[in-house]
Length: 372
Image 1: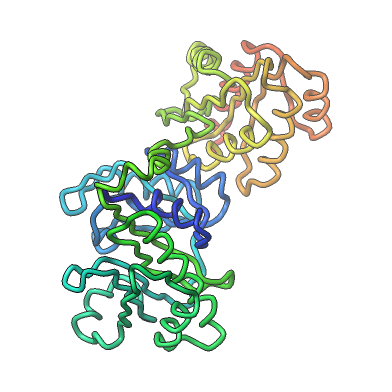
Image 2 (image 1 turned 45 degrees about the vertical axis):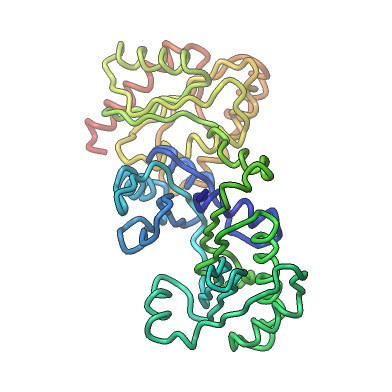
């Protein structure tokens, strides 16, 4: 059984191998939300069970949420060696100083595990094996005897890495072998293993487990379940971004925009118990969507607290490089505190959804008349 990179990395991380922060996305909108939440340049990687995705255009970079939306739209749905890309792994763009190659597999002819390592990792490792095979170190552990850390350090030394890197490299090799042995693997591979200012990190991960041994590893089934993102986001053709706490409230706000002659640019449901962080994330998403001229935030606080909404709005507007007009309808739980925070920050608000929707449309029309 082969595992996607994001699944393999979870296993590696559980066994002490350092990985990059990463999140899975199934749509361009979700990719934009993830990038917004991370707040750093990212790499978007097609999740497929075949190799060669980099050369096929399945690995691309994005510096901001808007660019992540565009790149994700290009990658999702493409075919890499007849395998359709259905989801992405989005990770922080790493500061790579050096790339290495580590792989553990079964050598059928020798009937035992084979560790291969090289200080020249990356996409050209197959060519290296053909043109300069001496640069790939091979080591056969004894399968019935414990693989010890000093053996891993000896492999690192033969890789000709700097002396200060022998112990850290040996530690990664030892931990990777433990993954291989513990999970009855056919293949456990890191290519590339990268050196960064934060040390050695698995920038990619390959894991293949013997099918007949899966019954011993029921915990791996959990890797097939993913956490649903906190917001639901849909792009539309208008220029007024609509955000609400609940699908019904968001749809009602969109109807009010249409009733007043405006056109919604987004449907963005932050859910019924949205936190300050989720409010901040939602606003960052729509602020990254170029067609948006005005944001209409429609919140009726129940589980969602009005003061949390206010703090999230204030934080998002402070962090954003883009100046945009926002109209807020804010009422419900802790509304007095929330309204006080908005007032102190100089952000206008309404308690009536009808008045707020009309104000959003009027403001948008004024901006268009002024050529903004």
